[in-house]
Amino acid sequence: MANIILRNVSADARIYNVKCAAVLEQGNVAKLGARDADGVYTVSATAAVDDLESVLIASVPLNYEAEKVEGDFSLAIGGIGRAYGFYNGLEFEIEDAQIDGATTKDQFCTLNTDTTFKFLAAATLAGTESVAFRVIEKGTLNGVASSTLLCIKA
Image (cartoon, rainbow, N blue to C red; front, side, top):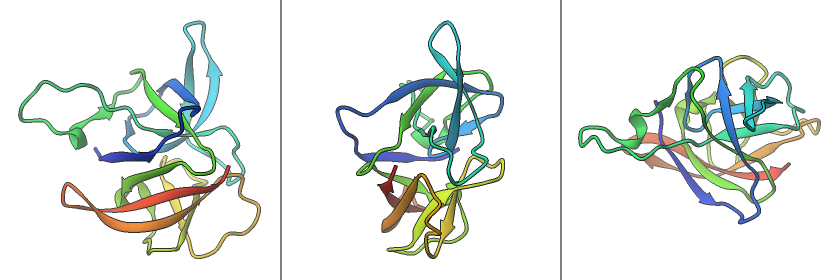
């Protein structure tokens, strides 16, 4: 369970309805797969730093339970949620738990090549990435360490 804040989203942003065979957290990164007859895409973990069709999971529903907060939400297996396509200038804040490795301001993040649905911290970019992010700010979300990422390559 995790928190996310979308900081700078274009009116032209690509937004997808997605589902997955795994539980997804806010701020996970996934790869778009096939689209079904209802227009819902099946997503999976990114497998390479050059996955062009990767998306940001940001699917917070309206919650009417007083004891629950945004960070208590996870997208259940097979549940339909929302994902945003990456583009240059997209800015969002996610909990550091959604990034493999420690981040510092002005460091980079890329797509992970394992099955964790997380971003990967990187000191430098290799140049082969199709999607890359710069950490522009460190902070906290509901008392949990966070990083604000700016998409610099998409």
